[in-house]
Length: 228
Length: 228
DNA sequence: GATGCCATGATTGTCGACACTTGGTTCGAT
DNA sequence: ATCGAACCAAGTGTCGACAATCATGGCATC
Image (tube, rainbow over all chains, first blue to last red; front, side, top):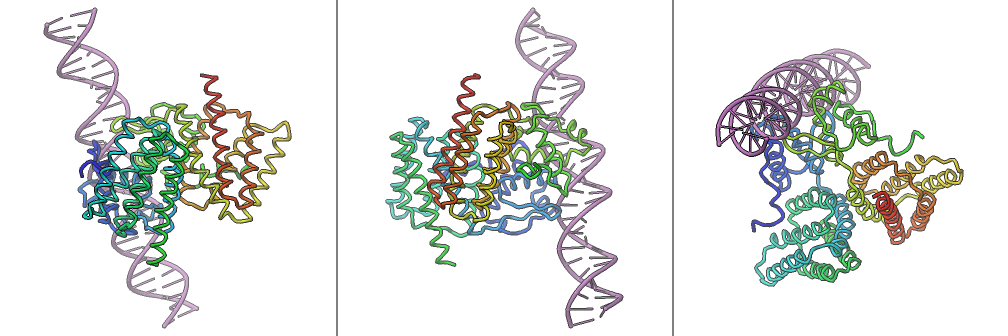
């Protein structure tokens, strides 16, 4: 499981600021630094054994990825995960990934489509085995979406989705252990999207992808309504 | 003409970094700092009479808005406006603003819709008068889109579109003086979108907005093909 | 007893200086 | 003459320290 999408967490960075950025991002996403907590620059700098300069740069990058909020003269806080924000993210994902699926159907290379189908085949075996771990299924879910977005070839689209929204989605999962009972349904929907892309039907691919993300959002809405 | 969308350029900032950020952003967007040019930190810092610290922070923020590119140990350059990038932006705008129009049709307050119609009424008079300036029409175009996006109430959506993409669009216009001969058509399409929103028809509003942005993109494609 | 003001502490914003990397130039060797 | 390596300059990355700002606590006053 060393070749999933999460590998961009600690890509070796030539500069200290980049390395610290990756480390503290992982710490925030995985909940090691709790959500809503205030971040003290001297404390964090001492914890990582660096000066405040690179740490401030890392904080700035974390702010640009919407993982921390900064107010002038007031410091930085890890964002608090509100339910509304989570649903907002799914709305944006519906729009952007729908478009990504449409373009991927038009421009994705045949080899990449074959890889995508192999990935889904593996996921199906994992789901069939009763012992599949929820974690793997969910990482696999991100992996599927990741490849579709890459298939669009739109660099800015890739940047928005992979550098901002996916990390936020992972953060939500780590916080409330979002165990999805929708795994089987989601896999089925993934296969439908992949089929539409393989048939080069952009219109259908977009429609299916939007329907898939909307279903995920509604599942979350139901759970939030139950848990209050 | 003091109440357009461009007012967030020099919002008074308590910190120097924020002020410099706004100033150099304006300088880049309006072409004062030419596209593709390398940015020297000491030079810019001296030019604005500040130290390198706040300037580096401003540069980082400019990088997060995709107006400059930074490579480690190599410095920052103003992005070069490639035609493909411009078209990519329109693809993203089609997806996001289409979704924004759909949600605005569902949730935009009646008063905001009335304001929107008044805005279009003003634009129609300006277009009818033969002496309307291209500049105003184009700023008005941004103003219309700005209000629709605001109407969605999705904060992250608003942030992506207003803080990143719109400034890029303005930059393109300032670079190649994008005089649109599509003003009359665009206004008509704006009115159709506004009507759909007024009728609370989200499906239609999204379809019309996407069609509108696609038409703008195709107009640019045609001009690029001609000018080669 | 409650409220407003002031002092204190801590934290952020800013600055100037130093170390390291990068790119170009020049000198030397083949 | 050309290729290669070492030298040099410019610029970025990093650091520690100073100044400005905000939060907290105590005190005086109403």
